[in-house]
Length: 180
Image (cartoon, rainbow, N blue to C red; front, top):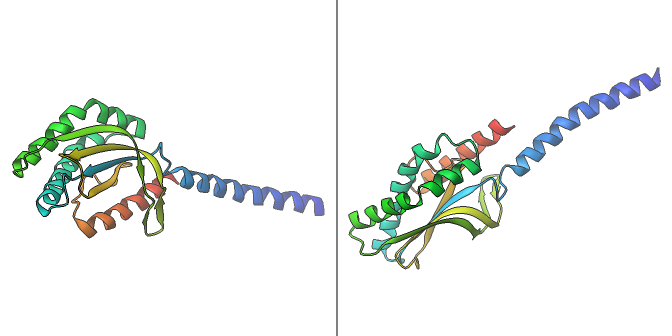
């Protein structure tokens, strides 16, 4: 009888431990370099004029990319959409630079780039080389802005200062719940 109870307890412990272990693995894998695609916009310079243009380009690209990436179900699918639209993305950035009276162009590339660790509440995006859509305005010597395109954490919303961080964290928590 003691052996039967021992076996029942062992089965219960394993039955609880296995799903918990799977959940922790999924949570840990949620933000690997291959599961994220970031957008990184580098300003021409640190002048207030060029920083304003950077923010205008950011808003325009986020608005332009939002419907194109909304239906993507994976980082790989998002990469394909971005690769197919690199010229159009550059054109959108250049249009906004011109609209803002800037006298320089933009370069756009999709590749792996170094990023520092970022913490949003309890969520940590690891340091390292990550896939990113990199948009360099003019000489690219100014301060930069970045966010995560996939999973879609900065597309489809206003991207102004503190609203960015609050929205980013709420989408991140929602995405983690969906993956659990």
